[in-house]
Image (cartoon, rainbow, N blue to C red; front, side, top):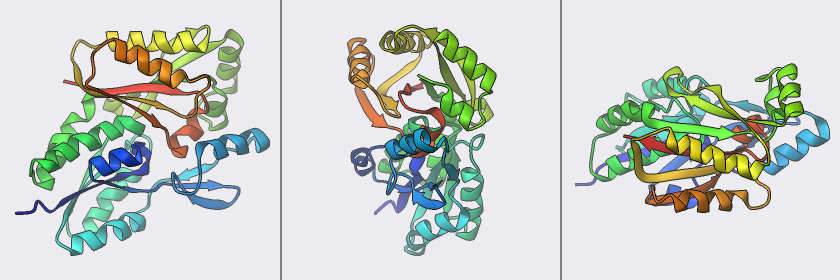
Length: 286
């Protein structure tokens, strides 16, 4: 008998088209508002366009959480066809998407099971894959949602910023702090706090050539855990110079920890806050 459970997620989970196809993931795009025009993130606007616009105008786009109507419109045809749906959202500490997915679930007769990823980007994408694997085993939507929600604290997400300019422009970093960091050549590690539903905090501050900073960050991050789940790791970046993503890939591969290493590009929603040359490694712990 067919297991009539489908998997949906916010587009900000940053999975590639190939991974979405591999794991049968449907995404609902977040709206990006730029120069009074509304775009669908990952559909008709790119991170490069967002960066270019900022450098020309010093204006960042506004991002709008996926609203209730968007979610209902995307999911209702499947619910009417007899499917139950697992829905993974951007962390509720960062966006109202999770709340909206819960309200949409009420409109859809309780056939939708929302999951607060308590994370962002491929930190949430890791949970999407966990959900997909359980659906493939024939689990009910309710059981999938319960198990994956419990795993949200096990998704380890962090990244290193090359510049604080975009955080400052978005009001997430004071001008004084940005000036001091830039003056000192600091490259901060930003860590996602799952216990605060995705709120971000500053970790170690690095200094020096960016390539060395990224490799040191990888070493420090992987050494901080003795219970890494070895299935997969994501190397996710906003944009990158000098093929640094590939150098980080080789550095991670040489450690022999992970069965699969994926390189993915962050969506405009994520990139607009962190700026170019941001890179992170994201993985699960046991």
